[in-house]
Amino acid sequence: MLERYNNIIELKEISSTNDYAMELAKRESVPDFTTICTNFQTKGRGQVGNFWESNMGENLLFSVIVHPREIALKEQFILSQCVALSVRDVVALFCSNVTVKWPNDIYVGNNKIAGILIENQLSQKHIEFSIIGIGLNVNQTIFKHAPNPTSLSMENEGVVFNKEELLHLFLNHFTENYNRILSNPEELRSRYLDNLYLKNVPHIYSDADGFFEGKITNVEPDGRLIITDKYDNEKKYYFKEVQYILI
Ligand code: BTN
Image 1 (cartoon, rainbow, N blue to C red):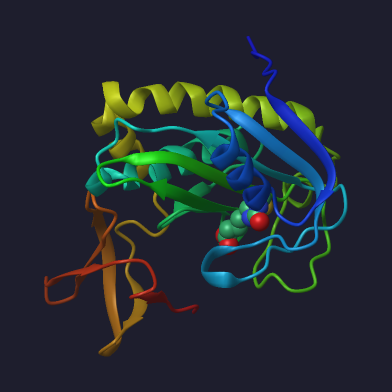
Image 2: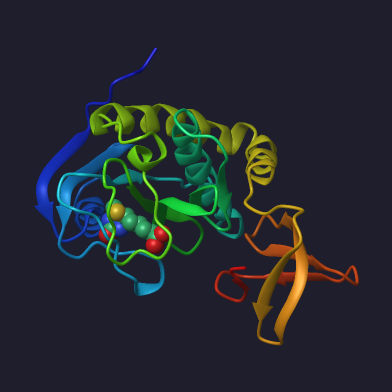
């Protein structure tokens, strides 16, 4: 059964749901899974300072606040894996060939359908709280800036989706997966690997030393991507240290 969530703050327009959630979580001790969603962001942020493109009212734009104090700092990538899998679970209800492009983009085929921006407030020993920002392309069919976008509607012959239902579906999957972070992290890690974009597929990458051919073979618990090159050397990368080359 689809459980409904009460702690959802709906805003018509905001600069960024992540910024709003960050201010809120600093100011008040809100319950886990408090969610801020909006129809439009004037300064929607993507990874590495990019902006997040989304037409007014067409897509899901939201941020969820959690307090994952039990996750060791060096293992915080498990939260990213858990969020990515939860978005993937929802998209896979409506599309086939849905994967997670390391570290946490959601792809349908070779196109990006959702992006995730996690911002952590750290204390010395643990994560005080996390703002989990998600942009899921739902009903938008024309994009001006995103390089390889797709949406649920584009993948389903123009069907218009109910955004509220999708948000509740996500929160259902996320709460379930979040509870597994402590009880069964290995299950999450192995499901993440099973659904990883281009896992074990030969592909061209580039790093600080230039172009090379290799296969993604694993992801370390600290989030490093492992690519095995054709001479069987294992190369390990943090985010932005390696690029996937389009062919
Ligand atoms: C990416 O670049 O892939 C991450 C995109 C994250 C976008 C979402 S939309 C809701 C939340 N608020 C933001 O400003 N960004 C995230």
